[in-house]
Length: 344
Image: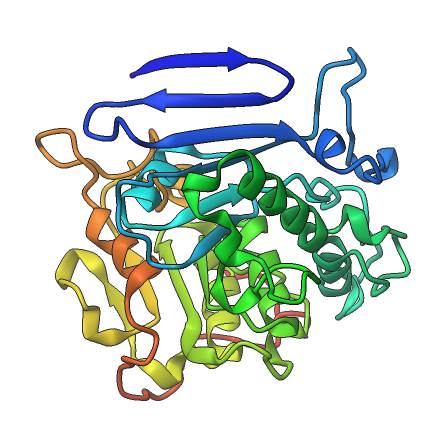
């Protein structure tokens, strides 16, 4: 891969890779796009590091040569170009906004944690609205508004990318029913919590959601339940503790088919919303946790390609109206984890 960076008043990066010479990767600081942006050091939510380096850079990518599916993926973790390149190849636009996501070890530390404590903080981080007593974020610093301003900037600086299709007609923000919210672990949990509050096109969660002591998973959902898609590894410790099966069950995903092991099935996986893998990760729960997204831990084919390419394509593009048959709840999945000792 060759990297050509042209620095002018903006930071716009063009990536030229084999097979995707038309793909564009762009970045800019949130505080340059929107001067209203502020830092919240108590959350680890910064505009600059202690060394004065930018900490609020946001990333976007699209391949204008690929027919657009009319969907914008908002990724709620650190940038992951291996994933973004695949998504662009599927005809999806991608952005990774800078928002408050480093609070997890800093806030909601009471014991026992309140059953809405973390869910409310996730919602405030996503919306910039007042849901949590632990933080006080302004609207320009929520994921929603930072994403809105970023897409506005992209539509001006890269009109050939057709970014303006994701802006609401009334100018109030994004057209959220064209948005796929996605993330891994902490990010997948925030994506699902946000989708409970705002109707989106789809949720794609990797190695999550967690929040095993929270109640938000059982709340009514603005996003129809058939739009939630999940994928994790069975050796991830989120399975040992029943975190994932609990969240998936409370989200209502059992109404759309069983848990399917992708190593034993092919797309469309019975149209289910719950996918797992058990490929060899050397018995490591840590490796298993990150093995379901493109990267060094992911499964490869003998030729070096991504073994789960068709799984990821399914998660992000399978028609949401196509669903599997309802199944009974798994008998070995505990919902009340507050009052249960951890499994050995």
